[in-house]
Length: 161
Image (cartoon, rainbow, N blue to C red; front, top):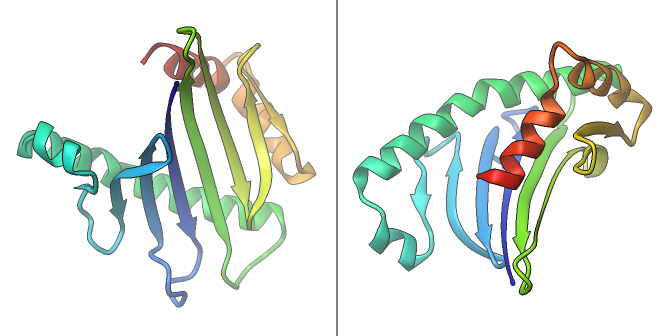
């Protein structure tokens, strides 16, 4: 089988040694792409990606990932406010991906963490977000609402893209 996984990380304080925002993509646990708020460029890490994708692909990836930066800054601030935190270094992460098994079946996952602990995850069976901390309940209620249906959209993406 094979796996594809992306890890998005937002950090609250520029004073840390970490970039404010970073993304790393893995195929079979080997890094193949990365982006961060300091370089502001999507870059191939694996040789096969460098060989198989041209400048247009990397420009498109860069633009898309630049667009994710403000959202993650917002997510870090929102999570801090839910925990009544006004300062310090905090991290908000999303990890999502899928697995292609040897028998041809697939399974996707999507989960968020705050300060290294699970915050909420997508129940891919029913397309609903499940809070794993009390502070995540406001977000999961909104994302699961009939108006938003974020879980259904994420489930569809994980299963069909």
